[in-house]
Image 1 (cartoon, rainbow, N blue to C red):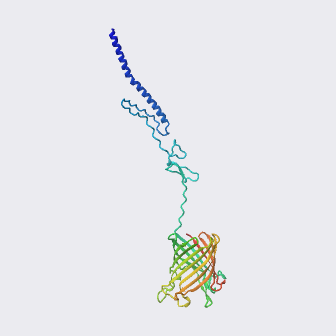
Image 2: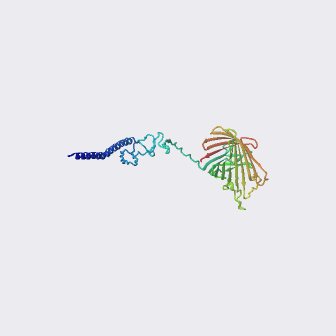
Image 3: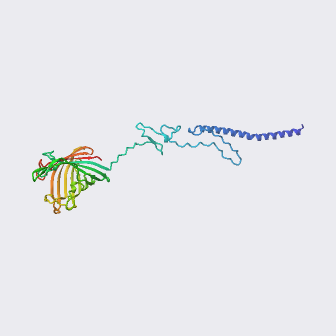
Length: 406
């Protein structure tokens, strides 16, 4: 080979080596990027291993590296960041690694399974719900009661069977036990309307006639209907710390023999028919925690639509009756108390001057109050007639029993 051929071969070899070097350079760069991707993958695995338990632990695939252009560099995408973990409500006995739904949580207490701690929704803290007290029973709007009034005999003959005349002590009729039924309804917190049937029981007795100075045998009665009335009562008109004023209004319905009388054969009218209107007012002044001063008054009107008048002047009929009863009451305790009052009674009769009033008797009344149980009260008393002289012949004893059922 001549010299020219050697020179040509050397030049070709040089060009070939340069070309090979140019073609192998990108392969070296690709190998370096692969190594970097592997390192990023290992780094992502470490990040994933530190996540809160319960999140995904799948390996994150490495993203391809975009080729670098000479004119603009594209942003390199990294591995996706784990999603933020939502805040969890922690119930007592649970942790983030073992969540427990609040809706199924029930913390049992020693006292009762009915008392459970509820989880508050806004804060996740627990507060103890106080056990609810049973609702108070609403008082009944109905009123039911039974009262008994016993009008006894004179103290000289306590079981004689007749009541004494206030002036002479002679017979004024049989002793009497009146049974009073109360059937009412509370219209509101202060007013009550009630039906009040009453029944009288009397023993067999001898009726004394002062004119003939003789006795006539009379038969007794058993639960004979007498003087029923309708009543509207007020618990209080005025009430302060030291004053209480209450009262009632009554209408006595003429349905019984004592309010209707007999039929007159000539006129056909019922003689003695009477409608009674009555009001009672009670005022109590509290002097101290045990002592009160009380004033009780009544006004009663006797309406006689048939205008019946007895022929005898001794039997004038009442149009109005007024009573006043001031007195003191002392309470020892919740069970016993005593009282003393002075009764005054006056009447206005038909056919008299409008200003005419007749004294219908006065008497001093000492009494004892005994609250046997709640709703049951016994009230024995003495009536000392003071019209003339006080004596055992004119002093009458009696008792009243009040029983409140509702």
